[in-house]
Length: 238
Image 1 (cartoon, rainbow, N blue to C red):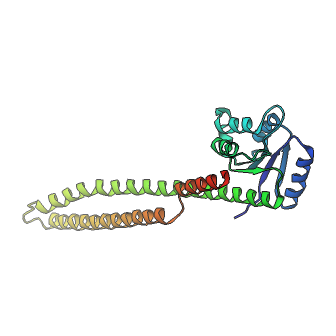
Image 2 (image 1 turned 90 degrees about the vertical axis):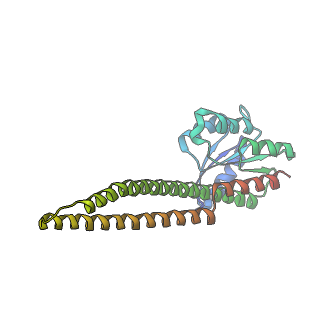
Image 3 (image 1 turned 90 degrees about the horizontal axis):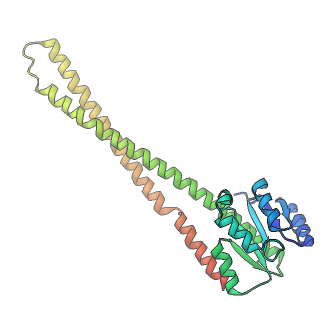
């Protein structure tokens, strides 16, 4: 899993912007920078970053205000899933809780250690990639389940007229007409073969449904990720 990507750094202190630009660029990340929240909103639409590192205390617009816009505003709904790591000099539990309730992924108190910041960046990107994979997998499973249901309906829909055709063909009294009698036998034989094929197809579809159910039980789900996030939220907030 590649953990590289584009990171938007939002901070009103040029020294911090330069520091992250140098350090993260050396590690293979693409870095874009903004000095305040208003500029950040423009760059989010322009650059579509994979992650936002956001300082809380800034002129014009605080980190909280920027986060509220990204997570709540309909105008930015296409960027709502971009993960945010917020920096703040405030270490109060209530501030951390407010940040997590707004929708940030992680909260780091200043002064910070870059190794810790890097570890958290990679963890957030890893969770984002995992969530993306889980969403795609669940969509594929839902599509397969829908197709299976359609195939079951198709097979069941065909079985009834085939049964009626075979029953009607068997009940015909054709007397001493050998040519027609042979045709009657052929209709019955072909009809029974089609019914057998439909039954086999139905069994295979049911096997696929059972396999899909097993996959859902054995693999990570969005609910699992949500529970993992809640554990992270409680441990980070205390």
